[in-house]
Image 1 (spheres, one colour):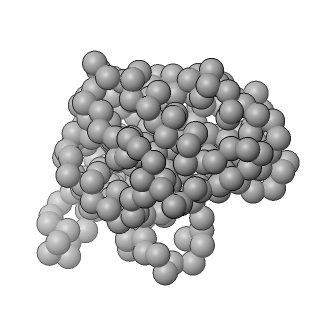
Image 2 (cartoon, rainbow, N blue to C red; image 1 turned 180 degrees about the vertical axis):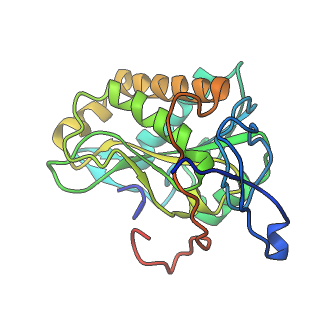
Length: 247
């Protein structure tokens, strides 16, 4: 795997650095969530101008390896394809645009330089041979809508989701520690013969990039509209390297 990897919403009421928490309940239609937020207890963003694309792994960190495919290579290729599809509509920031290693905390720091932005981190999975299909990870309430749209669009492209966990709420450094809406996607399982074969196809990677672009454009246009209730806020600490796997 690339990592491990009640309608309620809230908006900020104080300075998180001073120790206050966001607890004011607002309806899902309120706000556009373009400012930074420590907790992200609010509806998902609409009208954002910047998309930060994070290609997983890189350099000495190959990520998952399966059936003649290295995760770091296909993740970067997919990220570049998504970049090309979004350019002109958004300011696109590439966390890495070459085969180089970037520490997870540095990736978070890069994302936190921007306002009116969302982060999409691209990975390919590895587990049992029978599991296949895309998965999408989020933690913050304001990331739920984008995660749901991304999972829905990728699932329409994938021929199968056998054993896939679909959309998952998981506290990772790139889903919890950022101050902007952030989502991590796993395009498919390199440990699965069919998914690995598809991942080697440039046309399939392009279809997945187009699916993600559709989801991002839709989120920017309408926010969380039409997606149903938002998940409950959780005041969890930031994610650290010493946390148990899957926490």
